[in-house]
Image 1 (cartoon, rainbow, N blue to C red):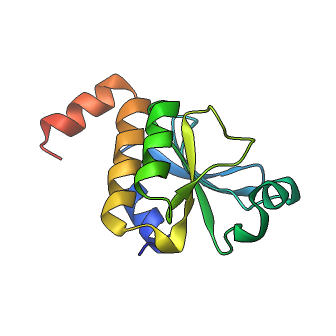
Image 2: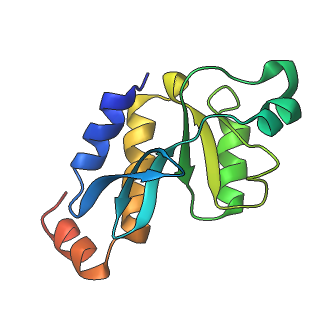
Length: 129
């Protein structure tokens, strides 16, 4: 299962990325676009989720669209979830300590492929990475 070092390593494999912050929390970006960010649960989140609200590190990950977010939540309910704040958006919340490393790497790479400048993506893909 993943940890913060795994997140840093997954992002570091991708050109043009940099550590950043989002709302005072750690985040990683490519050209100002979020790839992954720390998203602690707020009181409203905990109230909405009830007694089953997860504890531990929570990570936000962009998805292609809201359907992909829903598909991830349905396929991996012990890993992914949403809150009313994120309902209907192209993003999913993740229990970092439940996230398989390979899935983390896949989702970060997919977000990078959607968000990085096209020339950067083209060169990266041409190198066979």
